[in-house]
Length: 482
Ligand code: URP
Ligand code: ZN
Ligand code: ZN
Image 1 (cartoon, rainbow, N blue to C red):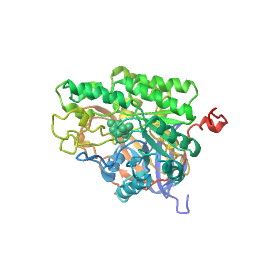
Image 2: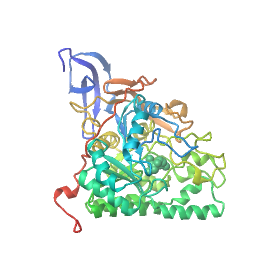
Image 3: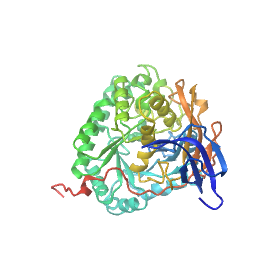
Image 4: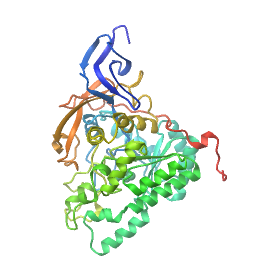
């Protein structure tokens, strides 16, 4: 506290962290938490929280904002609209992806991404890398330098022709991660199986959106997850499997954990709340709105994902916000209503609804504890991606990124949201909670009715190394081949 006292005091809050819940006041100076206790001295400003729950601001560690796409397709959200939407749903840090173009450097993608985000982001941000061309120079020089410079996580794709790496290329990158630290995030699906099934389905005229799920059955994700785990075991390095959709992939992760492997996992709201039925029927094209990869599965998969959220299997809960409009040439139906599923851009919006959906359907429905909610939406993302303890918790010295929760029931409509997308897949759902207020470094950016932040208010966050469990290699083991 300075001589002048606190800039802001939150009075009488139920403060929830990943470990504890306590009723106290919280004092803020210069955008940081400086004191937590009862009967704090008056602040220049005061917010009477009146016994409501306050959690750390959310970290959405998997979202796509202003990421270049193959024309005519375009993401609807840039850094302004995407982070405005994030703030209104309780998220104060986002980590989207800077994607390397084949034949170009990774640095070129980062430079481009700084241009897109700078002066536009309304919440704090960092960048994961997407590595599509791990040349000898990238592996020996660029990636180690970038990890050191604060870009300490990178996504590797096992599918999508423009992005995918071979197993040998994945091993090369994992080997760099083992030596230099950093977190490899893996999109695990078997590319050849998807391509083969897609050709078969198209040959028999089965091209409606619902066949997207038929072309990517659970087993292609199960096989991808199994292979990714084996590659990480060979190199003896942690990995984080992103957007896990169902029971068979969950089983692979459980088996890996039982063997003591550092395999972490992410899931997303779509795998809790949507099923393949949302992709429509044989001749319905409206289902394009729910096409994402992996696709939503079935009720039993939803139950197994909930189980993994409750029992600690999942490390992080992200949105995988991939915002395409339903209408228009650049959105979900390029070429018109009858677009074949192969041409529907993959991904659905969800940056604003991520936290309220999990609070409503998880905490208030009794499926997960409030502390586990904080762990999944803020603390573990901060640890996994090198932002802890500056972000992700309520502690002395941490940024005062805060969400004050209000429990109220309402029916969600796209008009409530602040993204630039013309739909939400969750329209019509009953929600039981929404942020009454979101604060970014002590500044109110959402007051329960209006976005009160500004473009450029978000700062870039260079990151440290992950601080989840240390890799087993650093505990003294060494694979035979090394
Ligand atoms: O369908 C999805 N998930 N689209 C976004 C890109 C990705 O693979 O995360
Ligand atoms: Zn992916
Ligand atoms: Zn994604």
